[in-house]
Length: 157
Image (cartoon, rainbow, N blue to C red; front, side, top):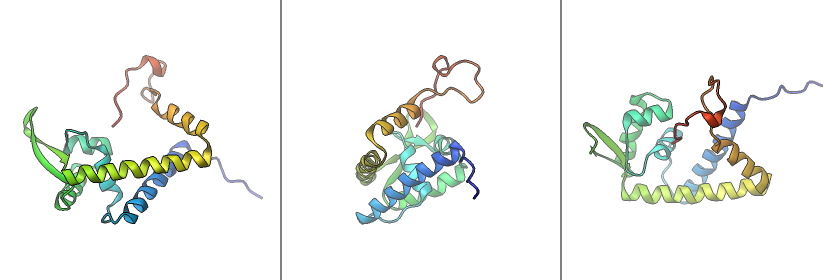
C-alpha cells in the first residue's frame, strides 16, 4: 500500500481558499444573487472602502490589467461597481462599490462569518484561532535574512 506524499502548504492554502469561495458562492446563490465568477469575487474582495485603481487591483490579484478591466466592466453592468475620478491623481480612476455593491458585500461578509463559524465547529475554536494567528503574523519576505518581526510588513489587502 502506497501512501500519498505530503501535500505542499501552497496546495493546502489553495484548497482552503476554494472551500471558502465555493461556500460563499453557494450561500449567495441560495440568497438569489446572480452567479459571479471567482475572479469577480476576488476583485470585489480586494476593493478598498474608498475605491481602488485597476492597476492596484491587478497587482493585488496577480492578474493582468485586462483581466481586471473585463471583470470591472461586468460588475459595472451588473450595478455593483462604478468608476470615479481619483482625487489623488487626475489620470487615475477609482473602482468602488455602488450602494447595491455595498449591500452585496455585506451579504458576502455575513456568509463568510457563517462559514468561519462552521469551520470552527469542524476543527475547533483553538485550531481556528491558531490558523488565524499564523496567517495574520508578519511573515517578512520569502528571502529576508532578518526574522519576520524585524521586517517591515506590507499591508495585506
